[in-house]
Image 1: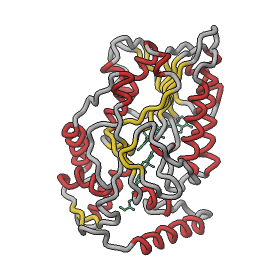
Image 2 (image 1 turned 30 degrees about the vertical axis):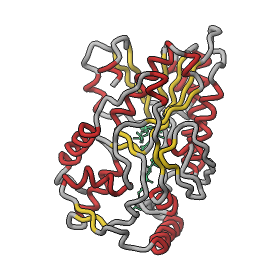
Image 3 (image 1 turned 180 degrees about the vertical axis):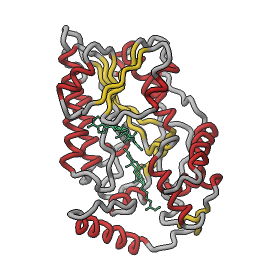
Image 4 (image 1 turned 90 degrees about the vertical axis):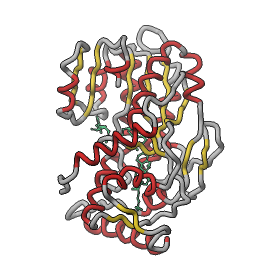
Length: 342
Ligand SMILES: NC(=O)c1ccc[n+]([C@@H]2O[C@H](COP(=O)([O-])OP(=O)(O)OC[C@H]3O[C@@H](n4cnc5c(N)ncnc54)[C@H](O)[C@@H]3O)[C@@H](O)[C@H]2O)c1
Ligand SMILES: C[C@@H](CO)CCC[C@@H](C)[C@H]1CC[C@H]2[C@@H]3[C@H](O)C=C4C[C@@H](O)CC[C@]4(C)[C@H]3CC[C@]12C
């Protein structure tokens, strides 16, 4: 997105623990693309990568709600990693920092309170027990508190945080897993969540576009944008997690069975708890990390949708991809996987 939409771009540095072959395709154009294999938990590696950069978009993170990583590792990557990025900006004199936060900084909370079409100012009791949302909330707080700190050379650091809801689009691993699961079940998925529970979703291309725009405007309107948070939104429809997935997976040949959940909630919760117990028991032998656990069940069962125009008001954001484009692009990606189920 930066290469396509930012005409003033001179160099793009991609810093990631895992560098993919897709990066090579980006290295053929006029803008210098530098791939740096590194770990955000290693302060010296981050500082070396940031040195001389004008803007940092910090999106690296450990996204884990399935119990794959320990809470210490999640904290180290998401919180200490973010602190390292901030310190690197301060030490090297980089003045602009955009942080990819998450809707989970707000909710759903442990009490399962619905957040219905809320905006950045909607009051909500943000209380988390799970390591992932806790880490994102702490990291966001660090980024916002760093706004105004003096960087090397004496200028103030300008920061802001973007909070995507559930991102979908090309490369969406959970969508891929659910697609393969449906294929294994003879082209069927079974409804587990009531259709009335709305879940916020946003297309990856629009999330990326919002990052590019805010990074640009942060430099022009530091006083307005500095220290602010913005939900990432577009025109993707408000639907339950499963009904939304069917917008994509339906045209790819899957069918969602049941107008209402086939299993009662208490039974699903029992299965989720059983999965958590199995995960704990099996840990010394193997990693058992299924989609269903008490936390993912609670998330999927709690309405969380945003309705806001703050990004439009503050930095002129309009989605780059319509709902139709976003849906078609994702469908095309799913169809291209056909026949490659593991
Ligand atoms: N997927 C979503 O629905 C969603 C929603 C809201 C916010 N987010 C946030 O968006 C960001 C990207 O998430 P994603 O879904 O694309 O996940 P992802 O796992 O696809 O991307 C995260 C990237 O961070 C890199 N990374 C992980 N640990 C690292 C480390 N120690 N050092 C350097 N790089 C490291 C990974 O290699 C990966 O490329 C994350 O910060 C996440 O919290 C994601
Ligand atoms: C009970 C299952 C029956 O089909 C469905 C389980 C679905 C869950 C695996 C997902 C429901 C909501 C998702 C999360 C949400 O979209 C927002 C997120 C924020 C982001 O920062 C990271 C990803 C995620 C936590 C996302 C993960 C998968 C769900 C819990």
